[in-house]
Image 1 (cartoon, rainbow, N blue to C red):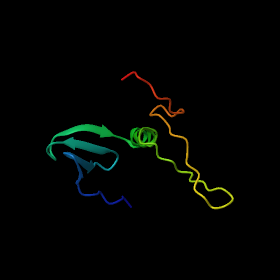
Image 2: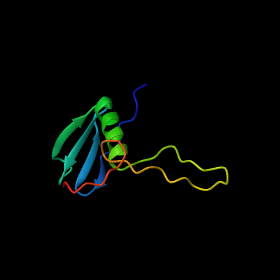
Image 3: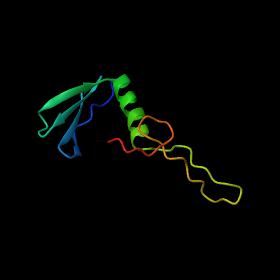
Length: 87
């Protein structure tokens, strides 16, 4: 049995997503203005990139006293954050 195709959805900030069955299509400014088609591999890569870019920490830790342990800040490249004057 084929899976149900989802209805198009507005994501915000002028971005729409369409379920094409085997891929997702992204539209901008108008739901008919499709500019990107993404398959499962591209979507997974985007999710991993977004996790690094927005410093998503999946492993929340607490010490022996149940106090939250602040994770190290990561830069978008995934390494330790080092302040820089370069912009």
